[in-house]
Image 1 (cartoon, one colour):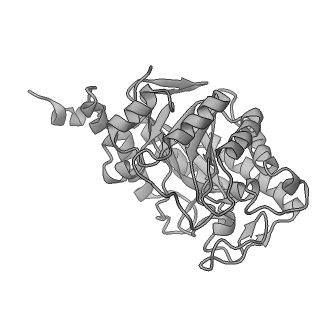
Image 2 (tube, helix red, strand yellow):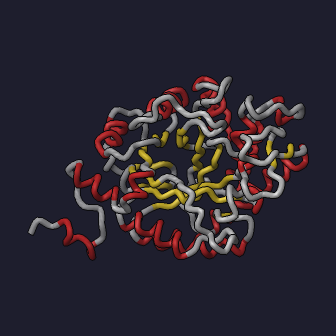
Image 3 (cartoon, helix red, strand yellow):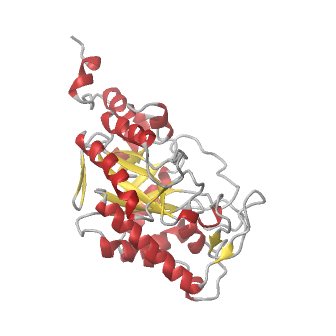
Length: 340
């Protein structure tokens, strides 16, 4: 079986190792224009220098009112493309591949004057009451996603991730807890997500793999289980998803009873086994041995390390050394790891 340090190939995407920097919101767009700035440039390029195989840029929204906060990234305008392109090209110089996570926060858009959702169900007392999208507005939202996907391709992304997890808009549509619509998007709760996947495939090169992040289980009372998410994932796979980034929760204020190291690996394994599709395991994966074992045992194909990389931009390099591999850093810092 492959290891964490082995290369990985999916369609035209070739990774030098199986280490992923998952999307993590920085809330640092001080100009509130959706454009990544110097902070984002340093944040991402430092992880590329540190040896990461795949970097997935943080939640990037298709509409100004689709952001969690006004300090989030966006790709609702062509004017935003150059700032993304600058970061992507710089990361690629160091051998990292770069994806962009495309999303809409839905009812969890904190700074939107009037959040929108699949149904007018408030997330919690700390959030605003959302308005239900009309059927026409849902169709227009799919078009907004498609335009953002096209901009991500133009920015030079190596892959695209659709955010259908953590209680954001696509999740709100495919969850029985938050979708009580009476139109076609309520009758088939996966329809919105399927249309977005098909929109991505319309503008993405065939050689570019499409990733979807999904919450495999919900923690709210009456929330769906792994069997339900597997059926969802089958529909998304048929529509064009090539790999699933498997997380959980986010649809309520409830959380898992135990969020210890690797607590979501079994979920990635479940979807991988049921669909025979590559998966990314995420969730307290910062122990290199744990991440390596998940790959060696065939439970997942890639390992995403969030908190570990926030603490240490060179996490991938340190992981490689701890597992008996070679340093992953460029020549200018190689002396730091020389025994001579």
